[in-house]
Image 1 (cartoon, rainbow, N blue to C red):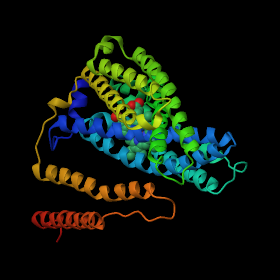
Image 2: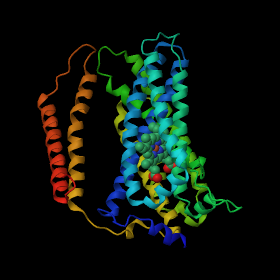
Image 3: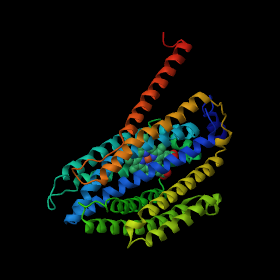
Image 4: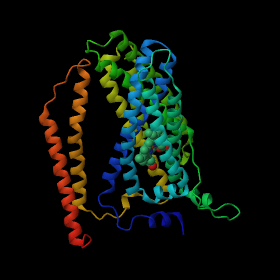
Length: 407
Ligand code: HEM
């Protein structure tokens, strides 16, 4: 059986429940959100270590603030990882399931390692919460940082194995003809690509520090000199990290098979231009980080999004070599489940609006003061949740009754 027949035969016989381009767009968008949060967590971990080492008041204060970012950010990064995972499983199922079978051990280790990283992040945050300058420790942050990098290595390997179907057979059947289904394969590491996804950690964290400095600037109980220190540190960090990330991007480009002519790909070209423009803008903001924080954050996300589009375009090139295209995946449009999916998505955004606005307002008032938030927003969010639950549970019961699976 040739490769194209194999990968196409492995597709879900039920077809896709909706049009592949919609899933692809959502895959890229949610991956961009995931990698942005991953970058914030990885960058915050190493910046917190650095700031603790300095053994001064501002450094420790920033390191404690980043301790919180690590724990909250890691939860968000993990949740945001689930979304692209679902879309990959839907449109690239033959590739994802083969990679996670070939490397089943590592796919499971991924879960163990990320869980330990999460506890280590908490260890750092709680351990230093009340520490004085000379007492603060970085041990748990090192553990968290190491485990986060290991997590990135595992998911990078699983992503790369999907792009190399031409090697699957030789990975399972050795040259001597021995077949191994042990799930211990570990292939395809491209450090240029991995670095291109990890170096922006410092750029994203730098921009986050600019936002932090700008957000707290109107609070009377915040030391303005501390905010200036954080803002300028953020801008410099973002500038140098962006320059290095561009360098890693060209290293990655050099690793891509030359027959793809990827240097001429429009997503790559737009990404390169926007990446350089973002770096130049950040360069212009090093002495006014507070004023330029919001446009810098928008530009940074646009650069990341275009980089994610380029990553997807590259995946399509690889897959076309194997005779696979998501655009000829059979579609059996299932409108009710699609409507429920999008309605749940909109409802989720509406429900999240309340805690988001509450957290934003709470940070704007002095410690000990109470933020005034319109309670009707919270009541509407709770009603939306109850309404959603009634509809989903009701639909489930009606469908089960209809299919005779309940009784
Ligand atoms: C917080 C720790 C995590 C780190 C440091 C991390 C890092 C990364 C990196 C660097 C990539 C890009 C790999 C590449 O394209 O070469 C990636 C992709 C991805 N990650 Fe994460 N990740 C984390 C957690 C998670 C979790 C918990 C999930 C799932 C629940 C997840 C799901 C994904 C998916 C689906 C992709 C894209 C795979 C593909 O497109 O084929 N990640 N992650």
